[in-house]
Image (cartoon, rainbow, N blue to C red; front, side, top):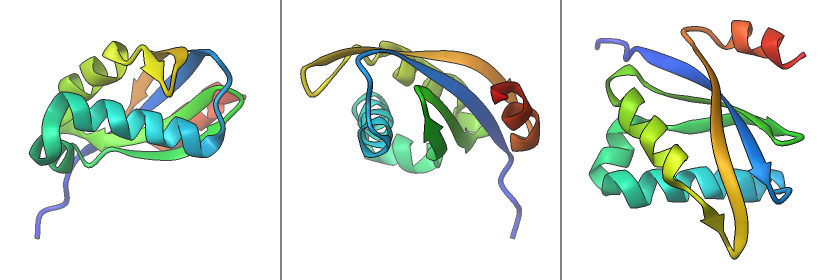
Amino acid sequence: MIREKKRWLLLKFEGQELSDADARRCCNDAILSFLGESGASKANFKVARYSKGVALASCSLASLEPVIAALALKRFHEGKGIAIRLISISGSAKVLKNKIR
């Protein structure tokens, strides 16, 4: 079985403060509404960590650009105005963890 290449994304949430569960749900809703069920499955998007308005997430390399577009288009979550900004992309989570500090 071939291992899937993935990229790590460092995301910043601007606007209303969200809880960990709300931030994860917000990202997943954005991916699902923009890419559909099949595209979301291929994207393999996961939020690994969220704290203080900054999230560390991963997705497949083949779906990187659609995932970025889906997150950028998300403006509201449960009536709260938010914006998801992409700060950085990396091939390893360790590099992005160091950027958070």
